[in-house]
Image 1 (cartoon, rainbow, N blue to C red):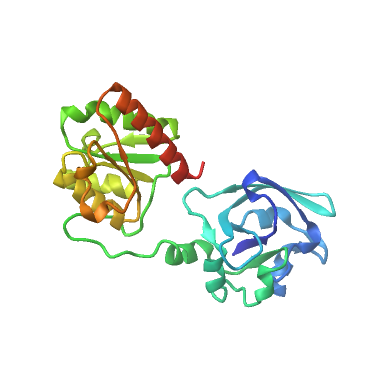
Image 2: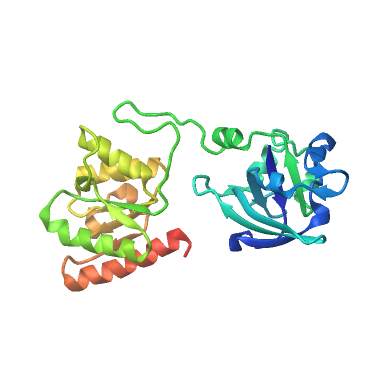
Length: 280
């Protein structure tokens, strides 16, 4: 079972108040009876133990989050909730929930246009595993997990393994840290027997991938292609616009000079771009 809370409140704040009279609406009678002591008294502790989808009204691009109720207090008229989101589950769209409403026991379209708290007899995480993290076709040259798992605070840098880029990498890492990210590149890790597996695993876990195209390094181009294919946010850097391949010139890139002043300017632009991608 799971709680479906459909209210136009500030879920992001983590503290909300909702009308007690709207609880257990659109809930089948046998299920509703499990969470009442007699006809009126709500068993809030039992309700709070269920996983939750926190929604706002609508059937389109409204954002919903999966999480849990940490504390619930009923004053008779209203219920004050303290909630938190599950960091392992990405934000959902109401359009996805609407498209799967039958599977989620939401046959009534009215549920998307009325503030209410319902309980559904559905295994929420099994549904999410199937609908949100579907199995993906996997390559044979290297391995990626069956279900992706992005580390939201991880950035990675793809660049030639050359000491001439050490200061550039330091600037990238500083830009990432100022945006609230930790940055790594493949030579920072040794988790697998092959370097390509370490590179791909790092890209696959990253929230943002920075690719320095300077020198037209074929490895960097290959890694940028992998990052784009996996759907990662990619930021291109270069010391010369001529090093950006024709197929990528429609994308914005950051041009920089490899000196103190140039790297400082690049770091600022990179920080700003990361902030934009992270929605800060």
